[in-house]
Each structure stands twice: as C-alpha cells, then as structure tokens.
Image 1 (cartoon, one colour):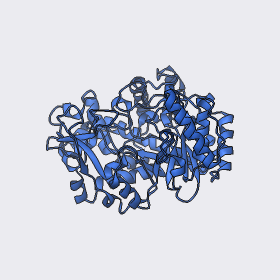
Image 2: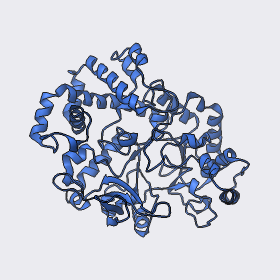
Image 3: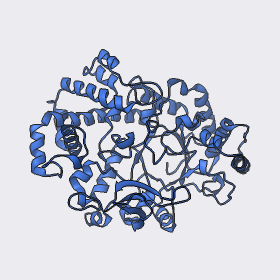
Image 4: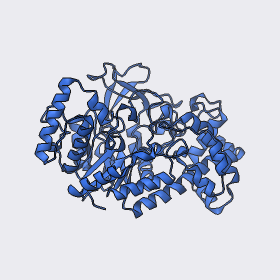
Length: 501
C-alpha cells in the first residue's frame, strides 16, 4: 500500500452470503477472495473481528482480543466430523437479507457446544493452544457470564464481581469444561481464519482489519484490569466516559458511555496493554485501520453522572509518544470528525495515510479537503464508510438545491481529472463518483460493496448513535457478485494503474 496504486472492497464478513444466517469464514469468503483477484483488487477491508456486543456492534465487544465465534463456518465443522449436515440444516439460524443475532446466540452457540463434545480436547495442539493463554481472560470472562445468566460483570455475585486471581483460578479448575469450550471457539476461529488469510495471500489479496479506539464497559479488560487502564476507582466505577461535543447536528453532543483510558498510567509501563492489542491485530491482518484516531491526540470526556455530553471537556492523549516505535506499521488512520491542529500535527509526524470520503466532497466549497483535486497521495479514498448512508441513498436524500450543487461540483471535479461524467440519475452518479475515486492521486481506493452496487438506504450497515436490528445486519446475496461488476472494476483499475497484483 505504501508504494503502489491499489484498490479494494469494504465488505464486513457478516454481510457475505451463506446458508447459516450470517456470513462466515467458509466457502463464500473464499469465493469473495477469488472475486477480488479477478477484479485485480489487492485489499479486502473488514470490520473488527471481535465478538459483537451491545446493539450487535463489533465496536462494543466484551473482549478486545477475542474473535467472533458467530463467523465460524459450521459446514467446515461438519467436514471435520464435529457436526452432521442434518444438525446444521435443522437449526433455525435465520436467513434472508438480515442477520438475526438472537438466532445466532440461541442456535449457533448450541451447535458449537455440540461440536465441542465431539472434539478431541486432549489433543496436543489444543492443549498447547490453551496453555499459551492468549484467550484465557476471554474464556474465563465468558464462563462467568454464562454462570450469571449473561449479566454484566458489575451485576455478578461476590466474590466474582471484582477479579481476584486465586478465586479465578479455582473457578477455572472447577468449571474447566466451560472454560475449555470458550477456548475451543477461539481455536476453531483461528484455524479457519488462517486458512482464509493464506488463501488470500496466494491470490495477491491482503486483509485490512479494524481496531476500535474504545472498548465496552462490560468487558473483560474493565473487570480484570480496571484502574490499571481506565479512569475508574478501585470498584471500577468511572469518573468520566467517552463522548463527542455538541455541534450543528446535535445540541447535546453524543454520549458514547465507553470508559476512557488513563494514558498517564499506561505510559508508566510503556503502553503495554495497547502494544499487545495492536501486535495481536497484526497477527490476524496485514493492514490495520485505527478507528477514531484523533483520540490519540486529544479525546472528549464527559462526567459519568451526566445524561448528555454538553459538559464534557478535551483531555490530552499520548500523541506521538505512543507511535514512536510503530512508524513502520501498515496503519490507516481514521482521521474523520472534529479535527484541529493537534490532529493534523500528529498525522504529519506519524505519516500514516488518512481517509478521504467522497460522500462529503461535493458541497460547492473549493477548499473541501475531501475533494479529489485537493488530495495528496498518502490517503485512502472511500465513497463512504460503514457509518455513512450508502452513496445512492445520500444522493436520493438531497434537496433540490443541494443536489444541483452536488452535480455541478461533481462535474467540475470530473473535468479536472479527465473522468467522463454522468449525472443523469443517482445510480449513474454513484458510478461517476467511483470512477473519480480511481482517477484520483491517492495510493489506495476502497469502495464499499453497497456503493459498487448502487444500493440505497436499505443497505445501510450502521446508523451511529442508534440501536436497531437494522444495524450490522445487512447481507448480500450470490446474485450481487456479477460478471458485470467484475468487468467494471477490472477495466477501471487497469485504466487508472491500480491493477498492481
């Protein structure tokens, strides 16, 4: 990514077709890699691989390093003799164009438990995996969650509510089967993931992962490490939580509620927890997008007792000090939102590519930094992200005046970059915007699949600050991966010098 023109597709694994109610690491993941290769694409960008949490969000996980067992392919387990095809088919895992996470919770975990009963828990490979301890915190935490009917850790009974090593070790000894089951979910995920990743590399495709800045309050990190990492007291009660200040769109700001880091304490041990987190991500992926990158310069914190984000304030993050030994990492910085001189200085010093979003570009302002004519090479260009309205839906929602401005601006940008412009309808405009992205100076272009297909509001992946079964649940079907789309991407990548496999 650093030295050549690339292109790729943003597609969450959960969105893949499958007959298991959710996209998995199975056959269609391999088919998608073939699709990328045939499009001469070099990057597959996914969302965080962590287990989903509150609101089915991968950004609200119970563990920062655990892996989402819902993505395990059951057909693969059947081939291993751990399940029968009849057991899979008879389970109600959901289907259609939406993931039903309640069915995944009720049915998939049950099937995984059944597979575990047939699994050789005494194999040398599995014992070595468990003893390595990489997922011991997660397995302990989930075992306790099951013990207490999936309640949050702060609702558990004493003496488990606050982590104690001696009590935890005794619990594992007395409940080893449950503990080993959650280890099994991670073992199987990694076995499937590594096979997929190796196949991607064989096809010239690299995987871009995603690491959230914040983690959930109901997480193993808060339960076990508490005041070693976060701004909380000895009982794990936060004094401040994360949020976003009021702006033109929200008079109250956004109250996210995540615990915020005690960066001074973490600096004292060389940012050990964060370093292990990032190094763990790079064991899984080739490129890492860091979400809410501006939080490493300054972050907005709100008194925990408040009901809105109005009374929050900005505090300093670790700035360049955190990245001084990571300057050669393949990182993409999500530098969107409220930016200031500190963020620009941090971006300049670390030299990671930032992000440009074409959905924001065509507003009539010649200084708009998302306009392709204002780009330099060191960026990744998108039509939109997983948090944005699909481009067609965005265009369809513009009022008459804004739509006319959008068309005029788009036409001017196309003329400047030698792109044939078609603004006859919103689908044609989507295609034109994609062509403009490919023609731009940035080294890497990544287009979400929903924009490549010119889908509308129905295909939105997430609407921030809302909790809905429409979030994180959209799925594509086999018919979406057309030869026409493959030809379009192959031709445009060749024409713009992005066929660098």
